[in-house]
Image (cartoon, rainbow, N blue to C red; front, side, top):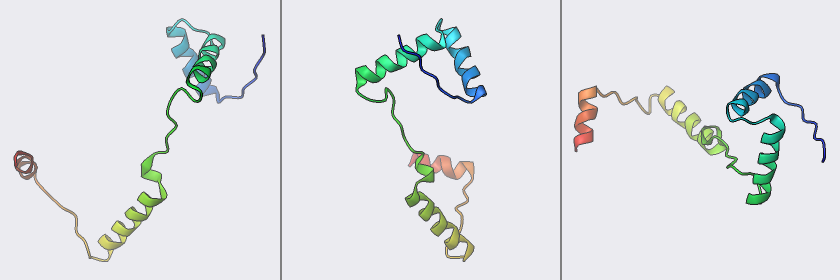
Length: 90
């Protein structure tokens, strides 16, 4: 049996331990489950995604939209709830 030493933020460890406890698992058991899922799936057993809001393309789009607004080339769209409901019915 191998030993694995991992450094984890205290708050992250405590939060994970609370959840594992509710599931009836120790950190060791949960780690073994994770490793088995990695082996079974041939990679991470969940998607690793970058938040698209922070993507380079979206940041450029936002900067362009802000510049257009600040220069007066565009204006915010202001609709009442009644206007929005009417649009939804169309």
